[in-house]
Every structure is written in C-alpha cells, then in structure tokens.
Image (tube, rainbow, N blue to C red; front, side, top):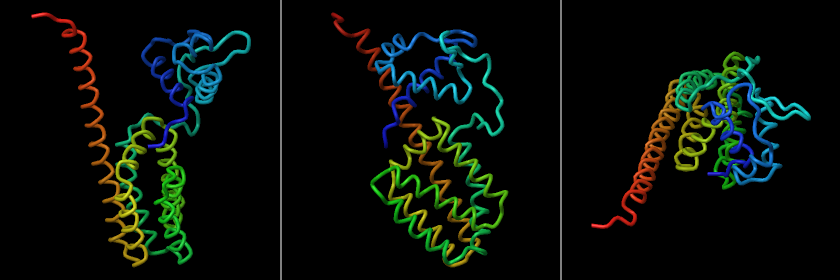
Amino acid sequence: MAEQRLFHAIAEQLTKLIDEGVFPPGSRLPGERELADRFDVSRVTIREAEIALQAIGRIEIKTGAGVYVCEAPPQRPGALPDVTAFEVTEARALVEAEAAALAAKHISDEDLAKLSALLDAMESEDEDIANKADGEFHATIALASGNNALVHTIEAYWRMREELPEVKRTYEAICDDDPKTRSTEHQEILDALLARDSDRARSAMRSHFHRMISSMLDVTEREALREVQERVSQSRERFLSGATH
C-alpha cells in the first residue's frame, strides 16, 4: 500500500484529538514547535497539516494570534458526509450496477477501447497510476450510461473514496491486498460491455463491489485481531515482566 503523505497522517491525528475533546472547540492549539515535538515531525509538516484542517473548516489560523479549533464543523455546500467505506461501497454497488447496465446499451467503440487501455494501466506497479486508471474506468462507464444524474452521483462517491481519510485507507488496503482479483473483475465488466449485455454488465459490476465488501471485512478483522494481540502483548510485558514465582 502506498504511504500516506505525512501531513495527511498528522492532520488525521489532530482531527482525532479534536473529536476526542483533547483540543475542544474554541481552544487554542499548541504552537508549531510543541506539536512538532509531540508528533516527531518537522514544523513544516505541522504547518501543512494545519492548512489542510483549515481548508475543511476544523481550525482557524489567526495570524499573530495562533491556531484555534472551530466551534463546530461548518456546513459547506458540497461537503462530504461522515460515512464508512462499507456505506460508500454498498451505495456504489447499487448505483454503478445500473449505470453499467445502461452503458451496455449505449457505449461507443471509442469508450470500449478506452476501457481496455485503462484496464492495462490498472495493472501498473505504480499504485498512483493504477488508482487513477481505476477511477477513470468507472467514470467512463458512468458517462457511457448517458444519464447525467448518475454521472454526478458516481463522481460524488469517488470523492468520498479519495477525500475521506478512513475510506481512502480502507480502499487502499483492499486494492493492495489483491490487485489480481481487481483486474479480473474489471475485465469481466469490460467483457459484458463488449457483448452489449446489460444483465451481465449489471451482475459483473455488482459482484465486483460485493467482493470488495467481503475484502473490507477481512481487512477489518485482521486489524482488530492485531490490535487485540498488541494489547495482550503490552499487558503481558507490564504484568509478567520481572515477575518471580
């Protein structure tokens, strides 16, 4: 899995501390130097993280006065909802399956050729290239459906996939976990579109997302197990280290 940019990780940690009440609404964040020491990063990284949080309305940077936690996350037009990767994938399965069924009836030869090229790009070892090709693959099918409402909805789901940190992390985990299966599933979708078979396209797209949900459950289970094992290990070290009979 590709490494997250460091300031994104720091922004997520600061967000978590804000949500947990460590830095409550209206409070002033510690200075850059203190935060840099706390997270063991540079002051530049802290500054980038704060700029990112100001952009989404979680904090306000007041020149000469410090950085303050906003009283409440603002309701901005186009703001993304607080959803899980499971919710995003479930919704995509419902909507994109029907988009694929419509696309099978209307898709052009040019779009089919584009999908084939994107499928090749998805097999790149460069995760950024593969991920971009994945997004364009789904966007091309949405456009081929000829339904602008579907296009808008599918674009919104992709924003959730890419811009919500927890959703993005989960998607990256399952894509990195089984890239061969991802390519096979997209090939099945393309084959159905090449055959102009709406039912088959709908089924292939739905199966793709249902497999993703299953993979997410596997990843979530492994992470939960690892956390339990780490807690047990820490307890063992604390309570048994140096113990005498």
